[in-house]
Amino acid sequence: MDRRKFLVGAGMGLIAAAAPISLSAAGDPIRKVAKTGRLNLSFFPYELKLRHAFNLARYSRTTTPDVQVQLEYDGVVGYGEASMPPYLGESVESVTKFLSSLDLTQFNDPFQIEDILTYVDSVAPNNRAAKASVDIALHDLLGKIMGQPWYKIWGYNAEKTPVTSFTIGIDEEKVVRQKVEEARPYKLIKVKMGLDKDQETINIIREMMPDVPICVDVNQGWNSKEHALEMCHWLNERNCLFVEQPFDKTWIDETAWLRERSPLPIIADEAFQRLPDIVRFKGVYDGINIKLMKSTGLYEAHKMVTLARALDMKVMIGCMTETSCAVTAAANLSPVVDFADLDGNLLIANDRFDGMTVENGKITLHDRPGLGIIPIPGL
Ligand code: MG
Image (cartoon, rainbow, N blue to C red; front, side, top):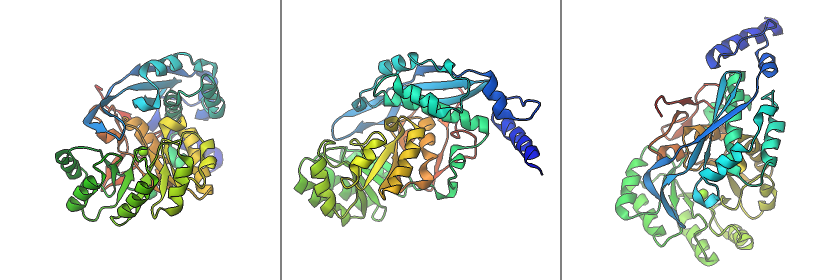
């Protein structure tokens, strides 16, 4: 088959599966799309309802504010999402204000990702979740136009997805036991720490699940170097894999001190937001927890994975409480990360999308184009 025939054939098959795009006489679907359309952005608030109250070292909540986004181009729709846990400083108001200020109709070629997202980033500082919502929708749109899922576009092997952790929050013993029961299908348990019940929680899990590896997220909750080091040794003896964000994000010297001495890797979460932070944290943390709501989306997150790996740092991909839209977006990066914490969609009761699944604890990606999600009718 010659190259031209291959492109036409491949394009037709992919487009038929993906979206109502007509082929030009030349049979070049991508160029045809780029000539005719405009990017149209729409969005609406959508409150995420949590299955259990979410208790962290510094606060508790039962809902998460969220804004659902659609980016339409020539009849093809990409989906995105901004999730705003309150501690990140964004709200439905700030996200809708930011999105209302964008004029994406100025772009008539959705493949100019660099130009489009540089513009989005330049409109206002911060607003990282709002920016991520546009980036995620753009990736979904482009993947659908190309007829391929993003993990394939990046050249990743879907067989190499990691297991995902299942999170157990800080809670009363009865609730912890109930959560451990729920966690049985998972191969990695993530435990929230930083209050006075740290050892008690680990002991309950070890009694109920003696062998499953545990990772620990302190959410900045420890305030003594010596206590943290003692806990790292104690956790190391109980099959713990790493400790996430042990101290306040401003405690750089203290974190480097702990990292020098800890038998467990120390991973940055709250301290780490954008791409330039990675270089600053080499030698302070062993690795980074990338989340799309911090990184402004997939475009920068993909660069973060590459940079962190080049610096020999561990890479974790995480999420906020989100629908399967943003969680599946992040899962497309998971074949090349060391750890995944992608259970945010499982923590909510009103997910709007069918997306990546967890089979025997392992992230399982679909072969659908774009992010690999489809909306659930009626939600
Ligand atoms: Mg964390």
